[in-house]
Length: 404
Image 1 (cartoon, helix red, strand yellow):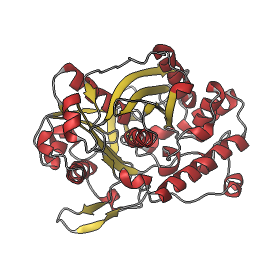
Image 2 (spheres, one colour):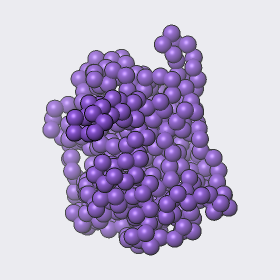
Image 3 (cartoon, one colour):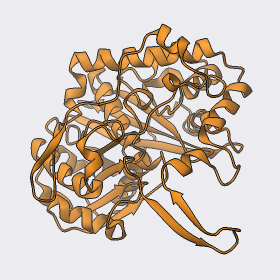
Image 4 (cartoon, one colour):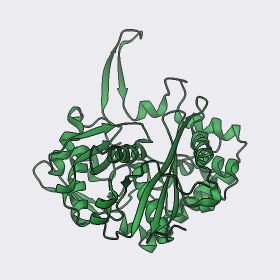
């Protein structure tokens, strides 16, 4: 075990300065009606106010989104203006890995000394995703239209297969049984609703109002709309689209935003309501697996990460998996010989949905809060992205100089 590993030794995530919107399913809330970049900037302003962090402290902004939004050409500077603080920034995009990569890039920004306080803001709106028209001289059609969300979900240009097919491929490769996958999905729903009832999510999720262009009230974003309780009987009756894949064992598209800060050690103590809580970046790993086997890639990334750091699963306090398919968790449990009941204890994207950009940011915040409740420890966060990519990262939470 290598206790002293730190990927960015100068960087910290100040506890309690973060927040996320709820993630309503696509076309179910007022978020479907607004410019998501503008909403995200304004929402970050609201969250910073609630957390008592002066936005004047921000020096730089890393934003992450994957779906085109109106005026995206102006990206981070425009979003910063919507935040009400004219600072420079940078936009990143890496499909479902965006929410984690944004935090890691902010850590590198602080580590380099370029900026001491970096805001991370991730968001996406799958509702009414745009359709683009592309001149394509190598295609017989000459001009091609692309629905940004649905056509990309349905077609990997490297393989010609859909994401759902990749899930079926992985289920067959690992000889998974539908019953096991449905047991995992049922457990995930129970975890989410138990956590919601406990009040844990109230520390993370912030109710937000949505206004139209005239400033009139459109609605409140105050629930993960679209999430319903499922029984095992419900899951058993669902149609199987591919091996071990049903509506209940895969996530759904949604809208939302999430934000956190990355700062120096000194600034973290100044900005956090609990300066004794120290959150450090430990390490990250990325892999590519074989084409059309996306659900196995996060597990391979975790294997690479643990081999690189010398840690084992026994060293990890909190395990959070971005699981667009319950198959992801089944593969992880089988390969790593890890109890899937000990994963995603506070909820996960399988249940509350997948707006892409902010998904892993919300999961990271949940994982860090869970570690604080445990008195500290290592937080493992991993997920898949865009065809065959897996990403994994470790964070260390200590309280009063001690980590469990």
